[in-house]
Image (cartoon, rainbow, N blue to C red):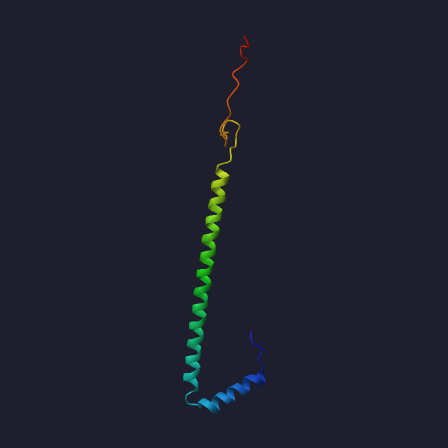
Length: 96
């Protein structure tokens, strides 16, 4: 994540000891740890809710596709026309 080497880490620790003091440094580090944990928890919660919404949308799409697939006739006997049939020709008409 961050590209921090040993020298940079040493400089940060020395500055923290000088600015905060050796006595309050553990308390500061604990507070920073709690803050980072809360940020991670909020990030995980956000990621989970976004994934759940995406799953719901995908589920609705799959359900719609299955319903469409269920309306496809499988046999010739099951054919139900989508349009109304035109008038049938009942055979030869008398032309007298």
